Length: 210
Image (cartoon, rainbow, N blue to C red; front, side):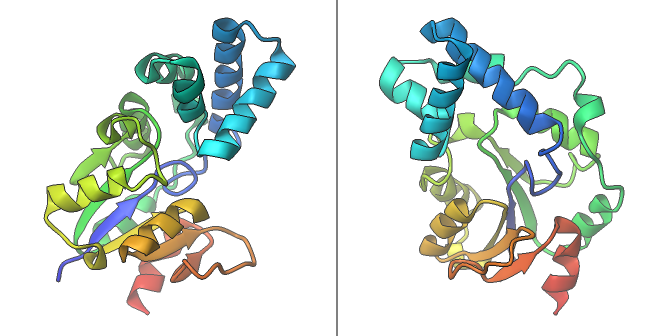
């Protein structure tokens, strides 16, 4: 059976922690301030609460405030200087090309952002599909809706898929479906839902060949 490699985007295919995540967090807090009439501290607290409770701030806003997800995502994912914020690993293209099978990006981010980041990483032509949160009907991971969509579209079983992610919660969902899991993390822990742990995606090819 040919494999289908399913890759998360942020903090999996690139390091979003230094520049991108702080920018998104500030943008989301500002959005909550403006649209819910909150001060900065209250907006930041609510943003974190929804993220911890639902896995995405957007999900809490949709559920409790009737926020339109497309509006929220567009305004919180504006990056006038994205080219200065994306940390590109030049060898990543080689690693991905050497992996046998189909490759899919599966991200909770909006499509316009995912496409822009993949282009800046110079790997945008290597994937059979980019599944962003719009394609999951705004039901972000770890909801299984997006996982099932990928299985149906590519006519594969979960056993044929390898999920590569930095989020244990999302890997847990993939494992429950029957996928192989690769955790991108420098943690010393090894949760039971993790089949393989690597420090960064550059180690993926070596771990695959072992």
